[in-house]
Length: 114
Length: 114
Image (tube, chains in turn yellow, red):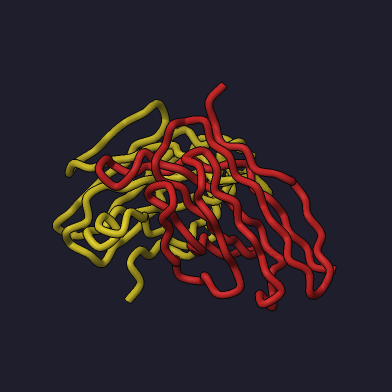
């Protein structure tokens, strides 16, 4: 079982819609969770992180964490064509914490069409 | 301007050659990482280092070598033993395992084998 899994996508939504990106993780003791955005040909950019159960909002982005169900999601409200990118989920697991590393999912490609 | 720099942006290697990719950071981060990304794939960890003069193998270390002689620098050598080195190489850094461990990425080096 992989440490971190993301819905395979690709995901396609119309402009102005809500895009929902999901991520599940295998280690119940995982501590912090990160969402990165990666435009084609560019490096990943950190957009949000969350470590407590519940929602964390930053502008049009909301990260949601449910530790009991072991999933974390990213909602993008009022999606724009400029949001079209691959979104990577990363998790700090207990094993990773000891080793000093994060575990990354394979990413979900999002396309927002006008 | 604080950040992570990688050079060169593009690199071409002939069969049997060793090449070295540069990564420098001025964020005063303790930890540094090297990842490889293939088209349509997630990030795979090659090597990482938590402190100067110490580093650990990641998930795909074979055919690669690193050094960490200075806190700011973490060069990666792709040796001739790496049979399929064509990929996008990303360097990242973080404060270290004691914090949330969010990682920040450099712009990447695209390596092509001729």
